Length: 433
Ligand SMILES: O=C([O-])C(=O)C[C@H](O)[C@@H](O)C(=O)[O-]
Ligand SMILES: [Mg+2]
Image (cartoon, rainbow, N blue to C red):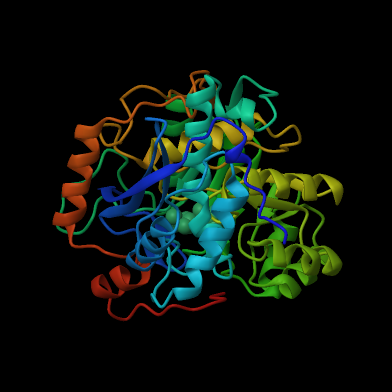
């Protein structure tokens, strides 16, 4: 009879003894998007994997109730697994999820649908396992991913239409941005503070003409910066083609103008600039149909839904093979995720664009990692060189943000529900224009 191969029988092992999952909440400004508006708190889950080697590692993921329930199912299946065997983690998690009856999304408020549940759940465990491996070996995670090919990683400034503050609360430090002047003001503040050398506008909020005007205003203010616009599928094919033609020569890429592979392919046949996506190609199952249809030029990877850092490298191999561009998506996150993104980006030789990050929207006093680990210079973050992810967890801060989660009352991200509570006539529409 064949015996299952177990490398841990032959090598020094680090077996999982348990997992702690801590939901946390941190303040989030009223950022507008095509499905509504960000609530006053963003939710995340901090996953700590403990081992019998006396070393633990961390991953960060969505904090929505349904996702937390799936993380708990996965966590219960992992004790005894060697952290050097991520394939074993993956198969145990896939098996555990067969028992999944939990409802609910995972923190994207309906904007990213169709990603693989197993990969979403695997992601923080993959990151934590790599963090432990690195700590045991005394090497940074980027080394475990094949070695850093760059010492710092470029990010783009992520601009949002926004209200001055959450209704009933004081104005935040960014103030309102509801027209081209407001967006340019926000961009100027962000570029001056972080040095970003590319800018992306989260669109799909106002009629396309207003958002086109905002892009022209950005171009006038920043003649040399690459610009992107992302309405999260808010436009019909016809509107997307019209906007694409209007903004030809202004954008470095047009991100998810319209929903679905077929819609994107129809737009791509008519507009001359690259089309990018984090909506119609969100799992390995989407890649072949998208390539066959000629739907996209650039895939925005995101280790939170592509199955962690190893699986994201697999995606990078696919984009390189098919001559597609690669960029990186982000939504509201803390420092563990930034560390993971930076290690992955550093070890991805063919990364064609500055990566997205929501980082500037986070109150600098709120994180689970020690303050000041990450600073942006010229829009870039240095790749940590310490063992593992190279970040220390601040356990007092973790406890504080967990208490904030308990007190804030939010249990799932719901941009649409929040908008409807504030403006009852608001209707979710896809596409909207
Ligand atoms: O590039 C994207 O599609 C995103 O970043 C999606 C995010 O959820 C963003 O729209 C947000 O947080 O409002
Ligand atoms: Mg996007």
